[in-house]
Length: 101
Image (cartoon, rainbow, N blue to C red; front, side, top):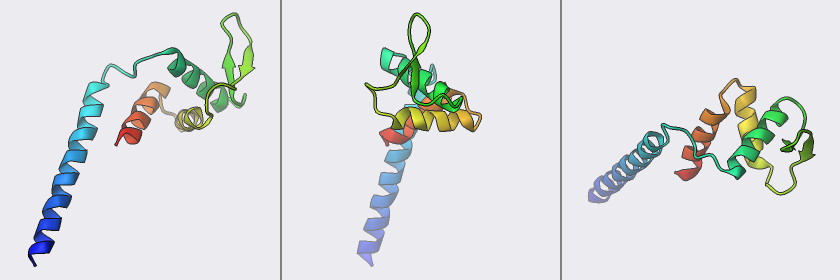
């Protein structure tokens, strides 16, 4: 029986640490995700994908070009959030929290 008590204690401690980690990530990103060039490309591509334009990104002087220098999974996940009605910045925050744990 002592092994069951110890294993439950370890599971409880692990769950508390995970909860603390998730809480810390949510609290530390209240101002939103840090926006870098990569983040802008991912969000822009996700918006185009959600509109049905495919994996395209906007050019600085207008027009579109295919997304060829970035992996397509992350903008696809952001686009899924957009198609479900979520704000892309909130979707990025949620995905970042999920991928960090």
